[in-house]
Amino acid sequence: MTMNTRWQLLCGMAVLVGLSGCASEKTPATADVAVSRQAVAAATSAGAADLAPAEMQSAREKLMRANQALAARDYKTAQDLATEASADAQLAQSKANSAKATAASDELQQNIRLLREELARANATNQQ
Image (tube, rainbow, N blue to C red; front, side, top):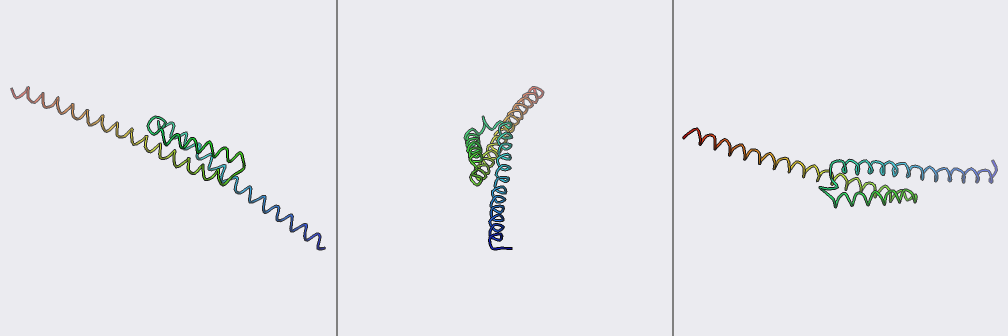
């Protein structure tokens, strides 16, 4: 091989390594944005928009910015924003689930109190 051929081969390999590095960055970022999108959808279906609006707004904004970064081929930023959006969506979903559980517990406690009152009245009536 001549020196010129070696140089061309070396440059070609450098370009391939560079391109494969770009491709490997794109794949995780795209996957993270998709996971984030699913997390936001799950939080929305759990009622987080009403029960944890601040967290949902933050998750949606970060997801939107992650999509913009992905479109601009800023894969590192897209990946970071997608991760943050997922965390915000999961927090919103947890808060929504917690609020629902608290409401159900409160309702159950109210029903127990009413049943005890009815039982006390029935016992008072029977003792007379």
